[in-house]
Every structure is written in structure tokens, then in C-alpha cells.
Length: 352
Image (cartoon, one colour):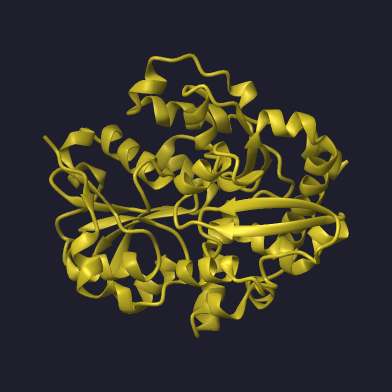
């Protein structure tokens, strides 16, 4: 029987002393004076939980706040942060927040569990994820076919990195019971796990990827930051980062949801006409961890994943369903109504 590993040993050994980007985001989100994560106190109050505010894949959340687009729509948005998307999902379904910024695939997973949740703004048409292998294990892992017997880092159990890692394994003939997923989060915790041998490789995003390559602690095995990379690894567009909400709340607060869609679509359009350096300059200073140039590189490498209009990419939901059905027994044995997992009602009005 496979034992699902946690990152206790490495954490106890020295990670408590590290200042992670995610921790910075969490601290900012919980601080009463956190101007970066709260609106101007006027307008309709909305709380949104993000699966890692500092992650470039979720950049539109903080950027929208920094550009003042929430305030311009008459919204008082408070951005909160959890290190993994699955924790943002939990906050949403428990009613702690009105919206979650995380991967679209959670809407399918939740539907088969009896929860009606839908993506209302689709930030991306590619995962933005990278499968990294450590420098030490580079010779042993040359493709997902080599995952057997390996310890692979993910942000958290039940997270989208967990989902995608399992799919890549199964697609390449490795059973999910033949490798060990290790929950290591992102940022310095992921990097330390890679350097110290707690994991042989793993799935993560920028700015973690850029830092690993800069430190020469690992190399890229699979790059899913572009639509082309998504097509090659997953067989089609893979809508990932999104704003998703409980359907009942969407239906009873359409005016507020429309304002949120307006703000996010403005941001996506702004991103499509500005450089990575321009975008980096708008973000909180601590997100760069003292290396503005490297942070801009991280943004540049991830920019291709984003949509320009917030619209769900054609055939995207079908790709996500195919991926989840490959390893998730709950979805394999269920009928998923994809039409109920997303709506384009609000982004179409925002772009019209």
C-alpha cells in the first residue's frame, strides 16, 4: 500500500526559517492594515480566496486590485490567500468567502460531490504548470514514464497539481499507486524539498520555476505554461486559473458578479497590451523577493497561458474532463454536466 507523504521531516529540519512568498501573501491578507489586499472600504463587500496570491498563475487577482479596477466597479474586494487551490475550494464551499481564484477543474470535482460551482471568469487556457526534476534525479527521470517509485512534489493533496501529476503518470503507463505524492506547497518549501532530496521532482509554477532554474536546482521536464505545451502534454487546451463561485450565489448576486467580471476582463486586456516588466512593476514589492529582473522573467514565461477576454476556451472543459476521468474514480463513474461548470454570461457582457 502506498503511503502518501507529507513534508514534515524537511519542514522540521529548517523550513520554519524560510520566508516564503506564500507566507508573505498570507501575512498581507490577514493584516488589518493590508492595503494591498483590501479595497477602499466603499461599495459592495466581496471576499475572494486565492490559492496562492503570489503565484503568477493567479496574478490577475492582485493585479486587478492594484490597478484599481475593483474600486472603479464599486466593489470592496478583500483578497485572502491559501497556499493551495484545494484550500481555496474548501473556503468557498464552506461559505467563508464568496469567490475563489483557483483551477477550473475543481468545478467538475465538486459537481460529482453534489456541489454546484461554476467558473465565471476564465483567466487561462493552459495550466501554467511546469514539471521539474531535481538536478540529482535528472538522469533517472526523462519522461513521466519514469515516475514509478519516485517522490513527486505537489502543492497539496486534492490540488490541481495532484490531479495533473496523476494524469501524466497514468497517461504514461504508471499507476497512481506506484509513486508518492508529497505535499510541499510552493516557493521556498518546494525548492528546499528539491534540494534536500525530499522529492525527486514535482509540479509547480512561477516564480518558483524561475528561482529553481536560476539556482540550477533542477530542470524542466514538461512545460505547460503555453497553449502549445498544454496541447502536447494534455491533448488540448486546459482552462486552469479562474474565478469560480457557488452557482446559487451567482444567480442571486448577478449585479455583483457582473462587476467582478468587468474588473477582471479589464485586467486581462491590460495584461495583453503591457510587458512583463510593466506588470511586475504593479505587483507588491515583496513578490519579487529582491530580484525584480527574475520576477519579470517569471511573468514573461507564464503570460502565454492567459486569455485576453475571460472566455472559456473551446473544447477546454472536455480536455479537463478527459484528464480527470483518467484517474479519478468518482468522475469516471459519474455523468458530468459540463454546461453547469462554467458560464460565459458575464464575460460576454463585459467584452461586448
